Length: 434
Image 1 (cartoon, rainbow, N blue to C red):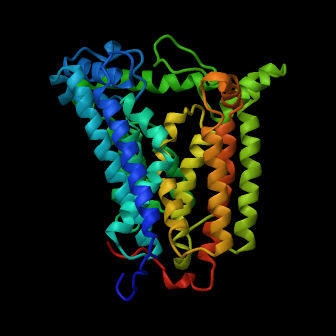
Image 2 (image 1 turned 30 degrees about the vertical axis):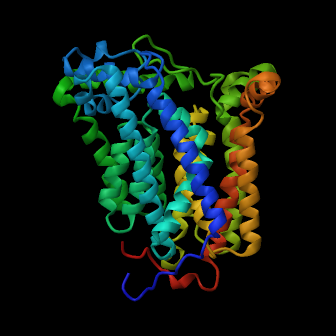
Image 3 (image 1 turned 90 degrees about the vertical axis):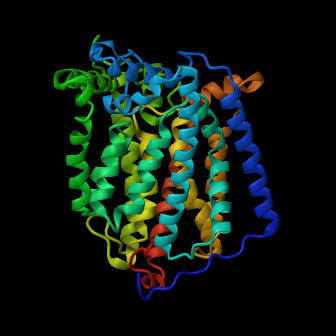
């Protein structure tokens, strides 16, 4: 914005920067070598479902011939039809390369957006260090994501690009959200937030764009078959509330043992106590309500509106709320595996920007750092395999990783509220121009 000057980021010690770069490139090389050199086994990864669904659409086979394990909107399969002209093993590796580029672009765009919201000067060496540090926090999830060739990179892109576009081009931001929701449904959670904060144009673009983009696959399937494909995809979600049908996508039940979300944890815990599984959602809602009350008290104490448009000098809070939505989504969603935590790279990016800047006080930085350590330990420990395998299974059964997400969500929003209400907060009233 004219008249506003960017703040140079503080220098990162050379030794620390070299350690981050070295570890990140070592992990990244190891992960990509494993992913590209591992023998391709059809049916042993998610990409097989993508490929065969796209092949069915290209051959006009109809919605009834989509693979039963294809649980996504038909648009994704329609969009990757060109890959089906390649042998599946080759297409798998092309998709891997595409996924890596998506992740890289989302991280750079996310860093750029966060820096502009905070009024930080663009510094390439500093940016690469921050991005690599954020990647290290998600290295385990990236390994799993790329080994099964999933599409969470597209969802990460949707969160990053929509945040970057929100201030300057809200309609484009809404369309990016709609596009992401036609790949997976996760970005739909941003629409209530846009309405909550009064971003009407972005919300309207997302609401109108979602069905319009969803109709594109009818160009190949035909209108009736496209509706059947959508019916199967959405019908599969009914299993999360106890609805079952033979003609829906094969989605695991709420109590699936691989899910670490709080509703899944309660769906397992309550029956073991002689209580109906139907209490899973009310129990998770009660926890969410308590968390919301704690967060609301922080907003109230600092006189920041919890509902409605933010004041110009509170604009930076959008970044914190946007990142917290992904934390909330994964902790309280009906089904979350550790691989799904891949989309938290944007949140990790925000945390790294805060820790490697002078935006926070020493006390704020220490609180955020130790909360991050607690959260990471909750995700990684106890390790699976060997003598700790039973403990790891029990921790996952209890939804342990999701419980550890909650403190980070709270501390992140608390930090954001404190940051935008500091005496110098009025210096940045909107994102700097790109």
